[in-house]
Structures are given as C-alpha cells and as structure tokens.
Image (tube, rainbow, N blue to C red; front, side, top):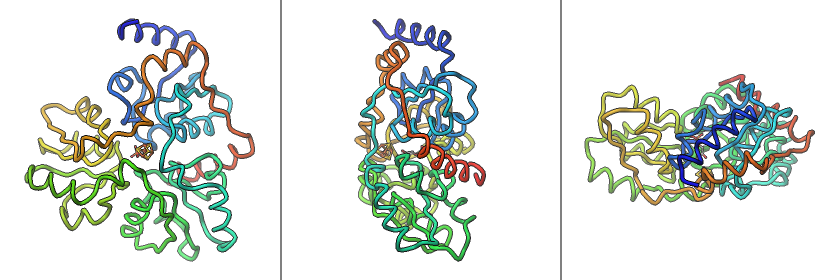
Length: 307
Ligand code: 13P
Ligand code: SF4
C-alpha cells in the first residue's frame, strides 16, 4: 500500500471506530501530519483527558499511552508498537520509590510523567517538563521531596525554585548525550541564533553560563516561543523530531538541531503501517490494573490542577 492509500484507510477506520490519533512531537513527520493532535507530554495528557472519542491511538511511547489510559478508564487506548519504551522511565521502579518512602514517611514524591503507572501510583504529584517548576514551587515547604527520575530536569527545577530536593540519578540516553561540547560547537557556528534547550539535556543548567540567554523549554514551549519570536534562526537542543513540528508551525524560520543524531529510537518505532494495523486489529490495548490506575490518576490530576 502506498502512503496515500495508507492515510486514506487510516482516516476511514478513524471514522468507523470514532478514534483520534494523538502524537508526540518526536514522532516521524508523516505520523505527525495525520495526527488529530500533536503536542508535548502535558498537552497530550490534557487532550487525552478531554477527548470524547471511543478509541485513542497513541503515537508516542508507553508511558504516554499509559497516561492516556489512566485518564480514560472507559476508553480503548492503543499503542501501535508495544516495544516503544523509554530509557528514562526504565531507571526507576516502584520498589525504589517504596525504599525512599520508608526513610521519609512524610516526604513527597514528585514524578516526571516519564515513569511507569506503578511509579505514578506511589507518587503524590506528577510533573512534565512544561510545568515542573510551577508544580514544585507550589508544594509544602516543610516536606522532604524526592524528584524522579530525571537528574538534569531535577537540577534545573531545584535551581529555579531554590527548593532542596532528593534527585533521582536517572537520565534519558538521547538528552544526556547533548552536552557542553555540542552546545559550544553550535555557539561557534551560529553565534547570532537563539538557543532552545530541553531541560532533560545533559548540558542541563550549565548551558546557562555558556549561553545565558538560552531558553529552557518543553517541546511545546519551543513551538510557542519560535512562533512569537522575531528571530529567524534557532539552534534546538532536543530530539530531532521536533524540527518537523517547528517547521510546520512557523514560516521563514530556520531550525538547526544541536545534534542531528539525537534520535529516540522508541519514538521512531511508530509508523503509518503500524497505526493502520493498530486500528484494524485493535492492537496493542493498553491495560492497567484498576487500583494502580486510580492511584496514578490522583497524581496526574493533582498536576493538572496546579498547571
Ligand atoms: P516533553 O514533555 O517536553 O514533550 O518531553 C517529553 C519527553 O519524552 C522528552 O524526552
Ligand atoms: Fe524517553 Fe528520552 Fe525517548 Fe523522551 S527521548 S521518550 S525521555 S528515551
């Protein structure tokens, strides 16, 4: 089947099944182009919470599809490839969280959405890269905090809020590989470009001494900023899929990836063929134990209430 036929067939099945396709900005271009909604983790959670479709096809990775399923217990949530994982969410388990809780019985567990449903179920509140500073700033000053699992995001939030936290030493293999070296190279080559940096990057807050006016944003924050800025040239430090979205949402602007090998192989597992197969054969249904889902939902709802 050629890609036009694929898209036609997907559209037809979407109508028949009352389905929507939600896609993250790291998805390949043709998947972003057929999605009903493209966004960052926060936008996708919000969209999943508000959709009245019967079926959600999640073009993203497992933790994102799980979040959609947690927010929509009565809907069918499909992920077109069950192996679309996340190296960052793999760095922390429910047992790890329980161990910290034993030592800090009054402590608060703040979980980045890049975590499994089991970890979310043990958390007090979730955050995304778009709202982590706001959420942490809203928490009770007298309680200990465990921030997990991303150490670079955690350090950035700690610096921005002045709030001392226990930070889990997890990292995403794609963003951890974006460090000072990559940043310096691009600073030399594109001295007048604006720099947009995802807070999961290995250069972390240290990038701010190299480029004090760099903007630290979630993926959707980057899109909003680029749309409204008068600048024409941007260096972008995150997974390269965002370049498609930035280009689609702006005109006459140039976006240079800080590292063109910054590719998340899990995000790229989703293809148009797999989306079609997913709608045709109802695969793979995301199923979460009811008790875990309802406890995880409390942590996600707490975040959505603050953000
Ligand atoms: P955003 O929420 O900024 O889209 O980030 C999600 C993610 O997985 C980053 O690697
Ligand atoms: Fe996970 Fe990193 Fe891929 Fe984002 S880019 S989904 S954090 S592995």
